[in-house]
Amino acid sequence: GQSLEQPSEVTAVEGAIVQINCTYQTSGFYGLSWYQQHDGGAPTFLSYNALDGLEETGRFSSFLSRSDSYGYLLLQELQMKDSASYFCAVFNQAGTALIFGKGTTLSVSS
Amino acid sequence: EAGVTQFPSHSVIEKGQTVTLRCDPISGHDNLYWYRRVMGKEIKFLLHFVKESKQDESGMPNNRFLAERTGGTYSTLKVQPAELEDSGVYFCASSQFEGQALSPEQYFGPGTRLTVT
Image (cartoon, rainbow over all chains, first blue to last red):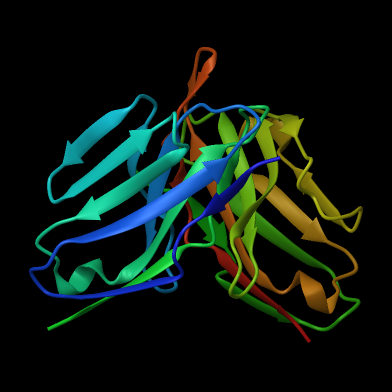
């Protein structure tokens, strides 16, 4: 089956850099996605890595190592509005839907 | 472009009652998904439609849950009869159908918070 592990909580201050790690076990692997969810809101797509390496989108970057079944989301120049839950996700074995990790709650303080 | 919408935003019902949740996906999106997040736990997949067909319903917890997508547009998820453990936030998501490759970007609605008392 599929499972994902990520830290439950991370705290940081404004302007800092934070890395949220995700390790996964899958029967079939299509790629690793990251989603952000503000309290009470809809999860929103941040990034997707299908191949090894680093993908950069503004202040956010995502990394994947398929050989290590590991990825991370890197958030730079943290802002208060980045306080949210961050989920890593993979497609299920059939490739029909997403399997999510339990989420990492990021708290950014001033 | 309007996003994914869900109705109602909140629902409080008693155990044994019936509730129907509605999801309107982004226009033109063939893929429609239902997910559920029980408090403190991960977002869990329930089922997947491609147009009006159920592609995968392996995540549906039991036969008290019935999902439909008549005409391949909006979808409903009915819980009958509701049990206490059905409480949680029910999310709907949609995505484009890009040939044989699924779009990794799914657009989520704001969710319906269901409380069963």
